[in-house]
Length: 387
Image (cartoon, rainbow, N blue to C red; front, side):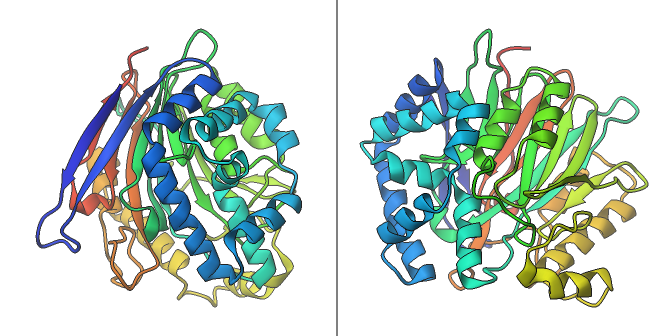
């Protein structure tokens, strides 16, 4: 079954468009889920691959198929994927089969952060991506929250989806924000395990680690918090990434590189928040050493990620209530017009807020989600079938 949520945006908010958020109910095995996904979104997946390849060619100035071939032959993620998430790999095969697209293209499309890392290595500094996340532990009867504005390239707009993994006796029910043809961007399962991510391009990467999309789905496939923590902190990571992990009443923040996973301490109120530069992990790529030394010395206050981080920190400090309303106000904020937490899709801007999520980890676990920037629509509530 496919559900459609339609988001109507105010004429005062540029651009004046309507977005459709599909919610796909996906039962069965990994391959069966992927096959259903691929068949139902065959048209959208074909369109996205064209846009993706055009974007690649604009960035790397070589044919996209050549870039994809070189990227896949220079990396070896499949061993880690087969070890930790074989069911999700079969899901990718199903998406390829159902959509009629080559497996290599659908597989490479999953590796969002990893092909950014590959571009970064070729060009010595692609630049930071833009995501802003907040985690709040449970206090005084209020549930714990994990939340995020997920920012990506503008060509992905209009292809927002939520995968509803129905689950079985082995696999927990899950809600996963994604786009057509992709297995994950962030998500929550019915045990109250939730995960949001932020690219940390400065951190060391590995050509044989576990890619981010598969890490997300692997953590969400766990049935206990202990298992989720173990996977996130012991598996080798393919690319630098910040993970805000929620488990029941608790939240954690980990900065992961190829060689280390460092927990970032919460603030005085117990909150964690993050943008797109390392704060605790010093496993830095050589070409970012000079920047990071300046950052540690407090001499680089003008970068986008640092400005957004300062916004989150200031708002967390100023607000008395740390609840759903605080999160929404923060994720909709544009305190700095050039470096906002909430990024509007504008013609002259390379990226935008693809979607915003708030995962509530109370006994009645929920996902609140928007398609596109959260200041342009109300959050839609999704609840679990299983408890």
